[in-house]
Length: 507
Image (cartoon, rainbow, N blue to C red):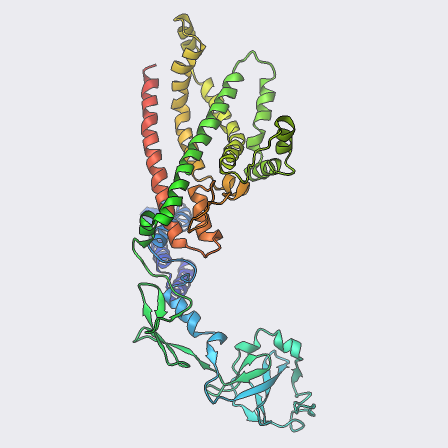
């Protein structure tokens, strides 16, 4: 426990420094919870569950909480850091350093000691030479005297006792040299370019009292604007990067009240529902048909045929999708060439919106029917045969037996699986992205979107694949809407399946 607490304290200090408060809170809860569980005897059984509970909080609860939090922020390109991280990015690093007016610049040659430390031989514009080491005052020096070897044509010693001279390529490609201060601050020299070193000063300095960043070169003051997440000057200039701030309901307002965005979102939502419903209906219909066909015990070879029909389900989906994509290739696809030879026409699966949608449903039918066939085969075996015998005696034909006996009793077992299948296809990212990446693209939309994009791939475009920048806050808002939609549909579907349970109780 001492070791766990020590690691937790170290992590908490790092996270607090970065301003990651949600993760700080969660880690604090986990640490306190683990301590309580291990130190109280009555909670002994929970010791075995504590690793799983901790991982659940980190891997499940935290992403959910962070997604909800992100939906109410401006988290996007240019606003990827916390305020503290943005301040550090702006005020630190070599890019923040500048040569003040009247500052002295030097040409330099680097030397490396046997212990790995570095030194610089500096030459100013008047031709004066200096020797500079980290943490020691810069001293005038002359080649050929003391520890310095004979000079070259530029007055630079060819050797220095205890040091090895670096050539231009070695010095220019060395990543450590630009980050070292040679000399004693405030007169320390830092390498600025491959040919120039100077006494540099930080250009941007953060003033905690003003909550502002001061530009010491231009004299501007950039005040923190927590409404937009930028440091902004009085004339409207901003410093990059910005930082994450809470913007309230702006992302949701943008989703529901912007006609330019609401249009494609509504079309994507309608297609998402159609795609999920069509996928469930087609796979269930074909799977049930095959299950009924091979449910006859008198049929020969039915076990072998069933085994072959399971192959599409056994092969990883991403492989099957790519194979179908190749078969539907407009120029070289086997399927398209066969259709062209037979009917003189090959569908434009990847360029026409209607055919693209049909192609996605067709590929998903191939991937999904074996699962439905297996589920329906098992459910059919559970229906008592004497019910069919009684119905046959009462004069029911084949369709009536299917309509009034098989289907209602089948839905009692299969109904929840159909609901889960609908929820899965509602967020079926792989089939859309691997088959055609949501294309063909819609025209006239402010955000990139395709005709076969479903909500989850549209969110992916916004958050990760958009050429105009990443918009995680807006994508998270859409993700919450997707969750509410799926949860609502699932709730009503489960209420509907209870009706079938009542039917089964009366049989």
